Length: 511
Length: 129
Image 1 (cartoon, each protein chain N blue to C red):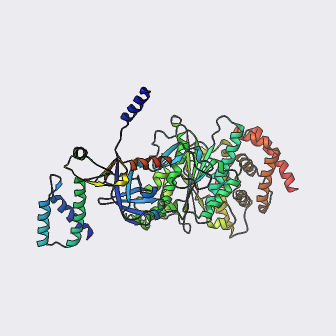
Image 2: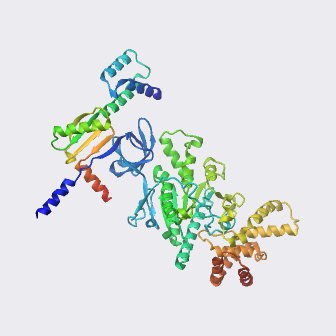
């Protein structure tokens, strides 16, 4: 009995009352989701600060007499005179596989009504990008499922490829198609339990979009079975600019978790134009000096430090990758504007979408002449290189001749053949939205094009023919497609099989 | 206009300090000089000067918030520790705040040292979120 009492007394003696030191300030000015705080003498730049009522903010302007903080949360709870304290921490978001299939806000809090997220790790939203030594060159393909991209503008894992175009030209559709294709590949690969198979997890960051658009995107992903491999970070137009500002960084932190743990991830920023506008708004309210088009002087750094975090790491650092598809909206096709040129100079290539092509019915409306992938065929499987090598050149020749041919009707046979071939290639690259194609199907179709199987089919029937060939191969030639996938290249045997198969299909199609 | 008043007020603050402390005599002398020879934007300068002197004085004065009785020895101990920590002479005043339940909260300039039961309950509540 006495030993029990002794134990408790000892426990009481051992209790130490530690004094907790906080650095505090008071709100002197509050407007437009930005608070000016008097005090906070020990606050650091980008430090998370806590307002009363559990509202958080970030200290962005450290001035001599006050601190400018952006507020992340409900501003209506705050008033002048409220106490603000430092937390000693950087703003962090939950990361990990627990977020897959969930929709979260810029702070990583769930907004889909599916309950709390049980994350075990947290990453700061601002992180230094990997240096030069941990990186490796991009050599693994990321198949978008869109034939014109995979054949002529191939994207690799770890690359940053910009999707740029005017409003309503199909930019988000390309991004969503890519996510759906990754989900399809993941499902197949994980079911087959292939050795060396690496799934790609997707993160879609919606910045400044309408809530209806985000809801529609979620529905499309859900219907395609892609949501289980995707994290959605939603910062809609109704969100305050500070949340829109940090949303891409939060998404990148979630993607970095996969990269640092030896996995591959894809992140889509839709779109960075609205992100720049949100940052401009914050900077102007913070009274930072404005530059060109009223953007602050560090608007390049805003995007460069974001996109540099996407990389391919070498084997010593886990062999993971984070591929970025940032989206930029142009006005009247002006790619020489401020923000578009900034992001073009940062990324490893761009996919340029034209309104004219879209209106002509060429969808995806990719301008092959202006689009480029700086990684190129290093990120293509050999089978693709065998069939797609000449396609870009043929299309370029077709475009040049098409303009010339409008003025004359007497064309030599070779020119006519080039025009016919080019018109058919344009039709073949048309693809409906949210229907990405398997790599093997793409290879087979392009092989058929190169071997003149489509030359006798009228141009107006090419889209129907392509769809028919796709269905034929999928339903009856599973073994052949599997062989192409396993080999990764078109051997003589495979080519002979393709010849037989496509001839059979063609006879049934014409009939 | 605001910038030049700020710069002027900062200079006034510098000459108001003696051994890193606000000197009452110097402040009085400065005010007399300004009164007899008021500069441009006098009122604005005085307002900024007031804010800066207030901030300096807060660095020298600690407020000990407590709940219940507070022995003099504890007050002296806190004063000595703060003087040692901040390397400056600190004056303390006490304030009874029953909401703290127990323990102390010491405020000096922008720093708050909190060992109150209220703070520990807040931390406990935060840990459940």
